[in-house]
Length: 349
Image 1 (cartoon, rainbow, N blue to C red):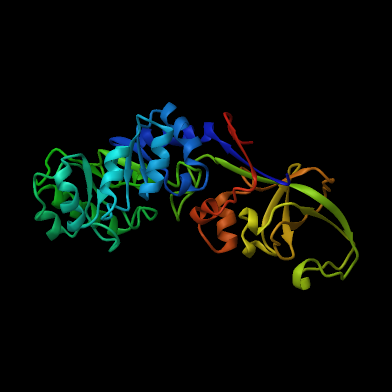
Image 2 (cartoon, rainbow, N blue to C red):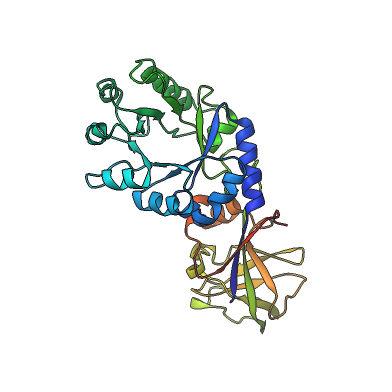
C-alpha cells in the first residue's frame, strides 16, 4: 500500500455544526457522487449523529444504495423521475425532486411526498415559473427547491434576483405548506435566502471553500498521503520523469512517492504541485505519473517508507485545485478508491 486517504468524521461533523448554526432553518447534506468521493455509506451515519436527517443524492441508484445504509434517512433524488423510476422510488422510500411537468404528472397518482424544482436562473433543471403555476394542487409537494448559481459570490446581484423569483413562485400558493429549499453552503453561511426552511450543504461539509472571494471558514476533512518509494540523488542537469521536463543545476535529492493521477493527483500538478513533510513544504518536480510523483524538499529529506502529504490540512484542497486549474469539487470526486481509506474520529493535523 503506497497511498492512503484519511477522512475525518470529526471534521465533517464540525463543518455540519457550523453550517447548521448559520442556517435559518434545517440543513440537509448533499451526498451525491458517493459523498463527493468520500464514501456516502460511511459519511451518512456520522452526519446523522451530528443531527442531520435529510440527504440529497443525484440518481435513483445513489438513493437505493443510501437507503440500504439507513432505514430512517429522508432521501431526495435531485435528477428527478424517469419513466421507469416510479416503482423504485416507492419501494425504497425515495423522494423525487420533480424537474418537469411530465415528471409531476408521472408522480401525481402515487399521492406520495415529493419536491418540486423551480428554475430561478440556472437554466438547468426545474420548472419555469409558468409551468409551476399550472401544477395540479393535488400533487403532494412538501419541498420547493431551487439552486443559487452565484452563491460563492455573495455580493452578486443575481442572488437577490433568484431569491425574488422563488418567493414569487411560493406566493402563488400552489403548495402553501411546502418548505423552501434554496441555499447551498455559501448561501447558508451568508444567509442569502433568509426564508429558507431547508438548506443543502455540499462542498462546505467536505472542507472545500464555499466562496471564490474570501477565506475558507471550514475545516479540512480529507488528507491524501503517499509513501516514499525511493529517494534518489540526482546529478546536475539530469532530466527527471517523463519527457525530462525538470532538472536541477546542482546535485539534488528527490523523493519518489507512491501516488499519481490514477490515485486522483491531477496531472496538471506537474512541475507545480505542493507537498508537505516534517514541517516543510515541498514541490512536485517533473510530470505526475500514473502511480508516482517526484517531490523535492529544500532542507529536509524523507527516507524510504515515510509518508508525504499531497492533500490535507497543510496542502489545501482549493490551493491544489487552483494550481491544477480546476475546482475542489473535481479534486474530491476524482480521488481513487485504490488508496487505503481510513475514517477517523479526530480532526486532521
